Image 1: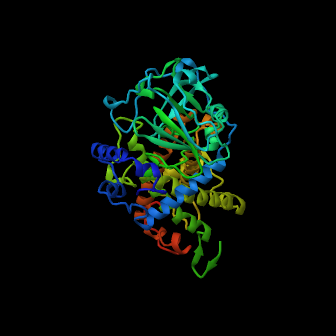
Image 2 (image 1 turned 90 degrees about the vertical axis):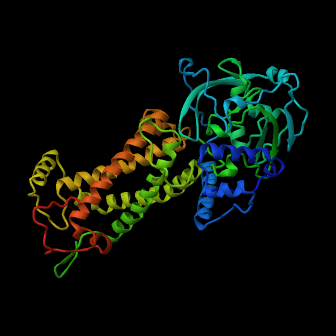
Image 3 (image 1 turned 90 degrees about the horizontal axis):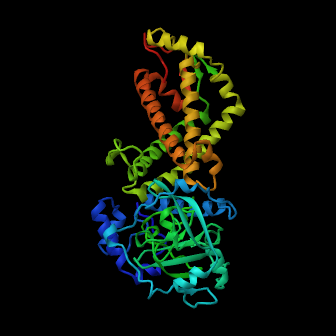
Amino acid sequence: MLLKRRLAPLMLERTQPILNIERRAFMKQTLSLGALALLTGCDSIEDNTPVDRILKAMSNWNDKAQGAIFDPNKLALTYEQKDVVDPFRFNAFYGEDEVVVVAEADYKLELSGMIADKASWTLAQLRELPQQSQITRHICVEGWSLIGKWGGPSFGDFLRKVGADTTAKYVGFKCADEYFTSLDMATALHPQTTMALTFNDKTIEPRNGFPFKIRVPTKLGFKNPKHVMEIFVTNDYPGGYWENQGYNWFSGA
Amino acid sequence: MSKIGDKIKIHPLYVRIFHWINAVAMVLMIMSGWQIYNASPLFEWLEFPRSLTLGGWLGGGLQFHFAVMWVFVINLLIYFFVSILSGHYRRSMFPVTPMSILRDLGKALRGRLPHDVGHYNSVQKISYIGVIVLMLTVFLSGLAIWKSVQFQTIGLLFGGYEGARLVHFICMSLICAFIVMHLVLVAIVPSTFIPMITGWARKSAPVEKGVDHVA
């Protein structure tokens, strides 16, 4: 029951996520046969059965359908300060005791791909950009939801500022915890998509994504990468940690 | 309603096609839905047995749910609008009044509800109207969950995202209750089964004495 699009180049470069898949698999014991094939090093995990092929085709169709439904000007509902849940729930593919703590002094946000100005950014520089914040509902692919307040530079403004090719299809993210994911360009440019340096007006904690998390109120939670180290713009499908295991890529809200 | 000899056609072709596609789609939606539910249960006391869930894990359950939903919804909407436009609902489901429902329910409980091939009694009418409303509501609440930002107006009807989740769950539960009742009644009055395949029923078919046909 595993949906595998194309094997993302990132997946080949990095072996850590596969180890993490293994860990989660045995912890949760909820893995499909397809993912078991991945664990055993078998790379022919695509299209195991006719049912898998149909599900894959339907998930690709759902990506297109969601892209068509997506209205770049439609804003996610915003809530009141009293609705904010603080401290916010920790959620990742590993336990809270394994949270990555990025050192601010060494931190540099790297840019690559179809971006004109690839100079790296320090946190201080990001904090000098105009900031925005919203109180929105974070919806997890599992179904639960929580309201939080995230603040930081508008991601769309940032992309335009560094000369990203906004006609490209994808914006990809590589994270300090080996997580990776990608957004469609329209969602990356959505006015509420934010480089969240803060949560509830305080510097975002490591457990919630320090140095920053890309907060995307129009996507499910796993499309909101934390501890972002590198941002790249590309026309080649970058996939993602969960997406490569079968979660729908677009996963719009 | 056409007749040949002592046979009458009680289920038009489009109703039978809808019924069987819907039966399969509904089972797949419920089983994959239970998989998704288990990932983050709404109620602590309720988790569905893994053997009754579809997809193997959350990702697989979601893939099934979001693939089969197209079949379920397109099939449902075609049936719904054809039924309205063709007058099927007007002829078969209405009129139905609270008094007629109480009267027929009373008769049914006393075992005195006559079985009239090709005509629904009031209990049948309200059951079918009810399950059609439930299916339309499970569709709309599902839309509000699936695209909580794009369809936020629909979501507001249900009290927002979490409200839509609850409504979706309640509709599922009531649809399951309908399915159980439906299957039990078909088992009690098996002569109702063949017409949902062929469309034809024997007008003079012996009616099981004292058994009510609500299936």
